[in-house]
Image 1: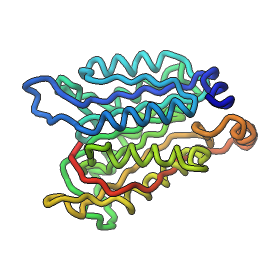
Image 2 (image 1 turned 120 degrees about the vertical axis):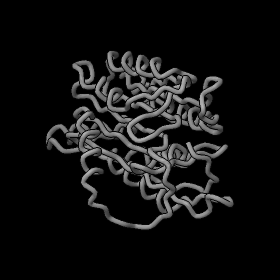
Image 3 (image 1 turned 90 degrees about the vertical axis):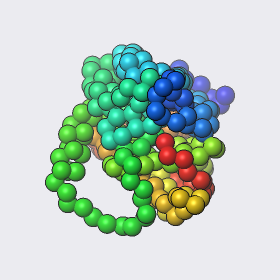
Image 4 (image 1 turned 120 degrees about the horizontal axis):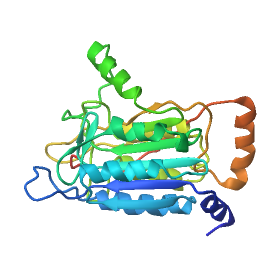
Length: 276
């Protein structure tokens, strides 16, 4: 382990990865082959960046709530990363028992004093509906969609950013080799300069790479696209994945100028899709 990684471990940044790959007998949800590849790679990448990573699998809805509640009550040095990977619909993901987990309830756990002033990042690999994205650029002024987004946004604590694999109402893709969303995030964090990006820049780059470099293949899904999106309530610029040796001067700059946070995104190899 490099010296900067040792410093980060000592500092106590943490990540909780919850990946539901299979479901109880009788639950009408298909196994998510490939999700284990995401969890293993993300564990490897975040560990190298100095995070203490906890992976949980095959959890029920109540166990998922409990895992995040416990995580929210344990202090971190600077940053907490939460990853949820399962089948889902708008505003929820599903536990191994088939019961729905409210994302708003998960986010609200992190509004307490233990996490005050700390950066909280969430990455959600799950469908948000059943529509398939044909890749057409459009604008919408749907009042109901705006109200839903506002309601969801208000459940997100200050100094938090949430990134979703796909837009509201749309499906997310899973391949035997992993999801395009998580694999592209890992690509970015492993690339030269990728981990040094301000977090919203990182997320923006992730958006771009998935949107413009990924295209599903296969008889039914050929040409279908995926468009990640993120919501941020960050109040300063943060560099949660940067080398400590180079990040310290930036942190001091951010404190003095009271600037804001950013996340970026990267490109991804074409993968077949399996709705996740």
